[in-house]
Length: 159
Image (cartoon, rainbow, N blue to C red; front, side):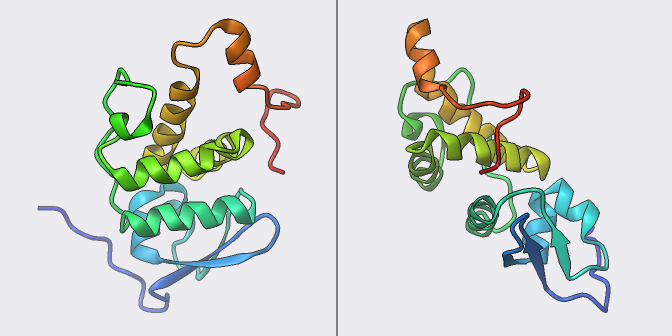
């Protein structure tokens, strides 16, 4: 039998996530703590939590966490079965959501980076699967074009 962590009596049911550019977004504490190792470990007794990502990425992360109600979705089967995300992920919502983000490659790398920093494994896997779909079956020159992201010092810039 699994036991839930009891919420501190002095804490709210909601947690406010503060982005690097100081935008504040609310998420149900139980959703955030279930899905993100970072939120779970850092939010104890706090109502606000500074997050290592921009407001755009935090907004997307909150949307993802809220849609899944804090539960990790079914794992993505590997190897990937095709070029389209709808064939590779069990959820149509996940496929459409990550396809929309993937239409801007830089945002795809940013969401993967933010999810990694926040310990949201299922979102990292989803973003990486989308990147893999983009390059699947491509020649080297095409992969370079697809992944042409301006990387400084080995890291993806936040902005």
